[in-house]
Amino acid sequence: MSSLRLLSGGRGKGYSPFRGALESALGLVYTRDWPARLWGLVPGACRVETRTVRAALLPRGSAPMRIGFVSDLHLGPTTPMPLLEAAFDELARAQLDALLLGGDYVFLDATPEKAHALQRLVSRVPARHKIAVLGNHDLWTDHGLVEEALAAAGATVLVNDAAWLGGDTIGVVGLDDPWTGTLDAERAFRIALGPAPEALVVLCHSPDGLPAAREAHAELAPDLPCLYLCGHTHGGQVSTPLGPLIVPGRYGKRYPFGHHEHEGLPLFVSRGVGATELPVRTYAPPEVVMVEL
Image: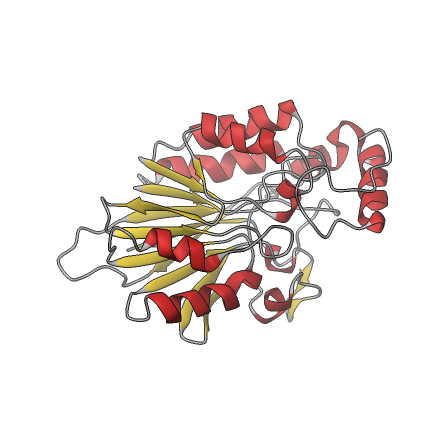
C-alpha cells in the first residue's frame, strides 16, 4: 500500500478515516511482508491446531458427514504463508464432504497476488462442496478479486443466500457480514428452507450475526436443528492465560472462541488462522475445525 486511503475500497461500511490512515501506515511499514517472514522463523509458529465439533443435526440412520471450517486467513504482511499452507494441508488430509470458509481472506489491499494465493490454497482441498462467505476485511477492499479467486477454486460465495449438502439434507445459510455488509437473515433462511432440509448450518463471518440468525430460525424453522459457525474474533489474537485482552464486536466479547449457546442456538466460534495489525498470536493458536455430523 503506497498511498493514503481513507475510504473503503469496496462495498463495506464502517471503514473510518482512522482505520484508513492506520492501514496505509502499516502498508508502508510492513513492506515486503517482513513481519510474516519473521513470524515464520519462530519455532512452532506455523503449527495449526485441529478442533473437532460433534453436532447431532442429522436424523438417526443418516450417513455421517465431515465438514471442514476455516476462517480469517488474512493473506498479507502479518500472516506467514507456511502457516496458511499447514492449515490447508490439514484440511486436504481430512477427507471432507464439504469445506466452509468464514471470510477475512486478506489483510490490507486485495491484490492479484493474494487472490492467486487464495485460489491455490482453497484448491488444495478435494471436497465435493466448498461454500464461502465474506468478512469485513474483504468488503473493505476489492472483494471482486476475492470472490473470483474463491469461485476459481470451486467455492460458492453466499451473500444472504443458501446452498445445500447431502442432496437437500443440510441447508447452509450464508450471511453477509453483520458489521460492514447488509445482513438479511430472513431472506437467506427462506431460500435455505425451500427444499425442506433436515438441518441447517449458518455460516457467518462474525458472532454479531447471531441475533438476526436466531430470530429468523425461531420464526421460520424453530424445530429444525441448527448450528451457527463463525470466526472474526481471532480468539483475541493477543491473549493471556486468563483470557483475551481485546475481542472485536459486541457478541465477540461474549463468545470469543469455542462452543457456546445463544438463546438456544448452538454456535462455534473459530480462532481462525491469520493475524491483523500485529504479526503475533499469544494464547490464541491458529486452528482449523472439523465438524462431525
